[in-house]
Length: 570
Image 1: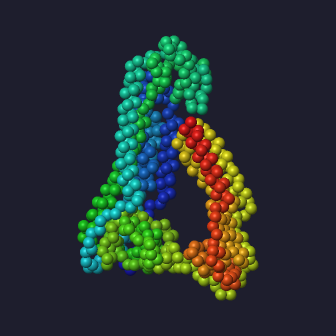
Image 2 (image 1 turned 180 degrees about the vertical axis):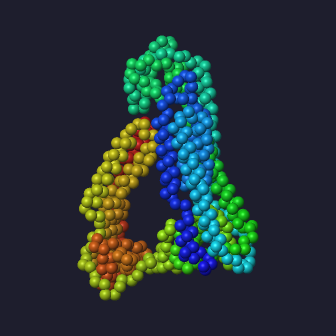
Image 3 (image 1 turned 90 degrees about the horizontal axis):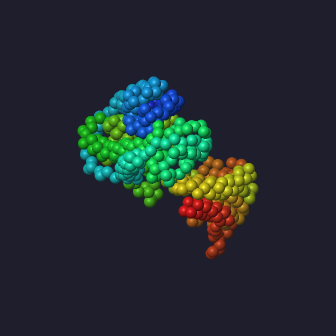
């Protein structure tokens, strides 16, 4: 077989990428085990063992590994497998529910089998890469390039620092809460109480306290884990000096969730720090290693934030190669997507592996691991050597002989969609205001305002978005602007598939897709109208103003924000 990453090798290499559906099988097994644990835990609360319904520090620590095992499957699969095994062992040691022991042991076995399968798949990719390797040409060594971390990696660093602070704050909150509980417990008394009501919306039940200390309220709201019936007599532990510290004797306050938050934040911070460290360490190892062989590939720049890798003899995509070079895009030459060039991959050539690109210009170091492209990824070679911001590079002139459509032409949403847009506009304002009317909405109101504002904008866009083309002018209406341009302000008319591309004198571009799909006919009609129009007089060009829907959006947005702030701050 020919050396290099040929089409056949690329197909085999991509096919060896671990399938994502297996992760969802593991997630389903995890959910089933979690449900089994909850349903199988029928042990009643008892004062003989307060960990049944009270604080259990072992559980609070191990539950971090439990949730990490399912969350990290997409990010760090081998760490997820280790967490699953750790939690299964911990569950066998402290959990007395046999159903949970069996369920989490099965999950651990499935995760371990997935790790073996994953290792085999990645080994297969390495073997394919080795079979494609050739000796590297004797190129001169290039100077070392400093590392320029991009925005996501800077956010990782900031996130790691923030999570360490969160972990420290959460652990301090745990210590403080336990200390306060000790103070309350030193003054506590055990009293009997009678349940007076069912659970309210917050899960509390009203009880009447019998034999209460002097000055203590006769009734109190208590949260029960095991919900008693109305009329039952329950034993409560109370602090005579603080009525807010009242709980069932067999259900002491549980502050260990602060430990869960602290350890979870530390785990994520550690993984972020490990990724930032890996970038530097892996780059240094790739740069200092003496590479004698490499995997031939074709390389192209796409989107100006990563390098795409192609097969050497076809348009089949191999992987994405993240780079940290700052690419200038302020000129048409810099914005053009360069045609593929020859290069060599060195290092760990697998999905998620760290590899470098070697070429005549030296070595390009990665900012992250290789990411395999989908199995059916094909690269359109016609997109190369074009400026993505210049419509002349990716459209074509109106074909000669195209039959023009009659003007005027109106492009807008169908009546049912415009009606739905008006309904969404009214619903966004009314329903959003109703949700924000709650005094307890707090900071979550920001999310409601954002969601309602997005729905408001979508509804107005469906209702008012309109383009009208006549023989003398264009009239364009959007949510915020209403623009009127004479036909004489058009510089050029082009087509892109079934879309008419109108380029004005100010370099703005209007894309019009008529309802019938005859974009070429519409472009021909516009071109004919432009040829018959005289050049505009001074001051008779494009007119732009706010549309009426902009005021509707402003009124709706102000109503939502004012309702939220009024009820929150009040």
